[in-house]
Image (cartoon, rainbow, N blue to C red):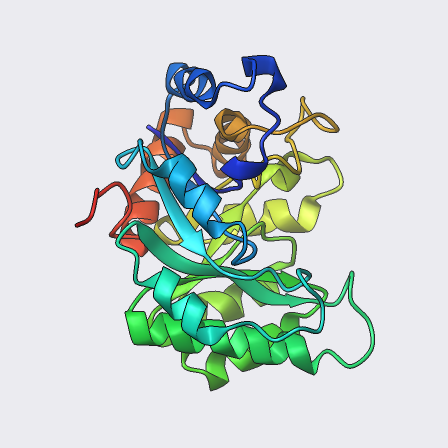
Length: 263
């Protein structure tokens, strides 16, 4: 009953599966993955990702959004974001947010994009997938100013400390742990994995990026979310099966449309 709450299925390396997505899906099933949320990072590639997910309505959900590092400085067509966001297979808006690690200078364009995504999410009543890197104060400030807490969301691939996690939780954000939580130098993230309330955490791969130990440095796949679950279970003193079940329940609480074929 493993759910990968954040992956990029249209970017996976399918060479080990002879470029056959169905073969990859069979491997994921064999490893116990019951659902994956394929996350959009730009509007141009969304239709292809949507088509990839189409034959698997109970196993793959999608989101639509523009990553803060995509097409730097350019505005996004809000009408197109809203149009795609109305798709019944779209369960969330994002990923969106702020990234000061890869971007420099006047980043007002990132702020505006983030605000647009939250506004669209509120109009549609769908949660937000938030990316935040080296931008904690502005991320939380904009989230609060735009009323993001009304629809809720998740800080994906969490890489901060307990202070940010605590503040985010107070703003109706979930915390999602990626393969980073398995890294030896991730003590602050591991502390958060211990302290976060049982009903407010998710697990993810962010595949094809950030493969967990013992696959670090290699291509990542959604079924490797097992290693994230195992690490969180170890940190919290729980059985692997408990973490798999709890994180799956939390996923469906945040994304109630996931796994439903839609109209």
